[in-house]
Image (cartoon, rainbow, N blue to C red; front, side, top):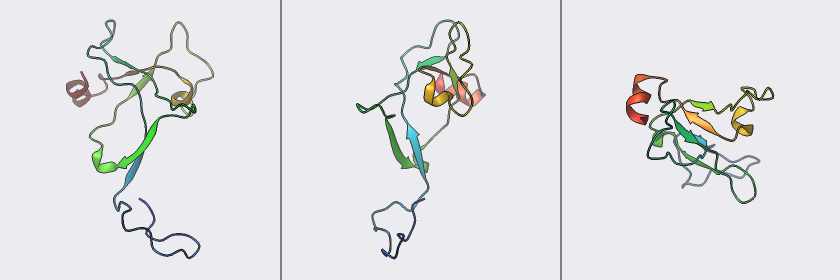
Length: 109
């Protein structure tokens, strides 16, 4: 959530600031109409702005309906420099794991 008062004695926050919890979202390509043939998962790639930064936005947490598990596309071999801390920043394509739960299967596939 955004603060209700501003730092350094600047007074209250603007009245138009949202009062609810917010989420930072980095955007990926839209899902194709059909899943990939070999595993029935959807392929995604990160979207970037013209300046090379991730395409992102801040949205109210109440607007999020579901999370999803992204699975890195490894190719012929796994990149050993990928870690849980950097894989979302350095991997160039992912699969949406619609097999992670019955709910994901019914809503993503």
